[in-house]
Length: 61
Image 1: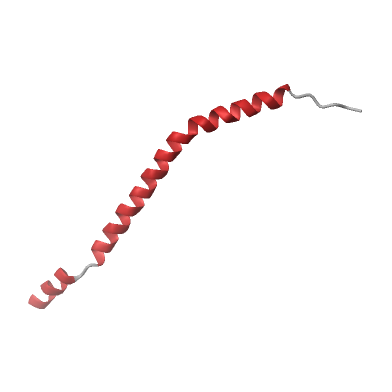
Image 2: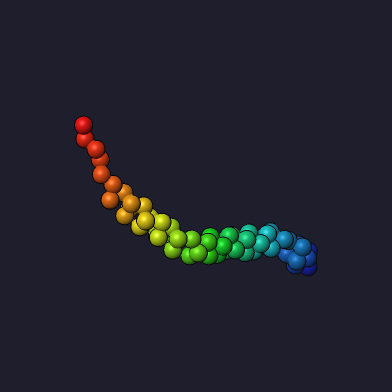
């Protein structure tokens, strides 16, 4: 029983899992922050492209 407790204390598999969860959460949070920052500019640019294309005329020969 004492050996089992010592082995449990030395086992670091759970610590690695926690590290990966924290890293994944940080990457997801960074992605969401970038999306929130860029989405307004992309929407404005799409609107400008739409209005420019809608005013163009196609010449027929």
